[in-house]
Length: 166
Image (cartoon, rainbow, N blue to C red):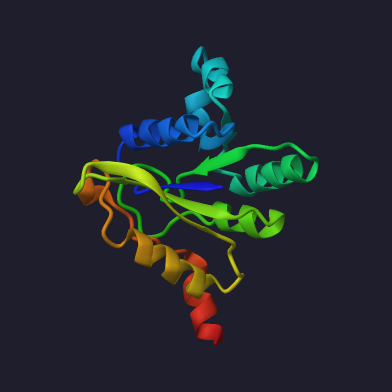
């Protein structure tokens, strides 16, 4: 699984797909279902897109997990900060997919500050959500997307519950 962050512009998405293609990775990516409406649908699917219904996001997690368990082999590009606007939390689907399938996570980035894109470390998530997210936060701490003011801090809603339970 390739995390594409920070996702602050459509150019971030294009650059992350370019990285995957450069390395010859057969990719699938998650995108809001409206991207697949009308004439764009066949193009988006051909590019590896998997539509996400934001009203039922768990369905896409189950679908991706089922595809992987059925033996389909692909790299999955996910932008967990969701929309290209500043949000309070990252979407947790990437975490659930990685944990349920055992897929390792590679941290990909777009950094306007240094005008670079690339791949960071690859590791397996442990299930200790706060610790895993601390590792992810440390990597992305100095990364800024195309529109830095729209950056979302890597944080999952479930971290707060996990920290309280400790």
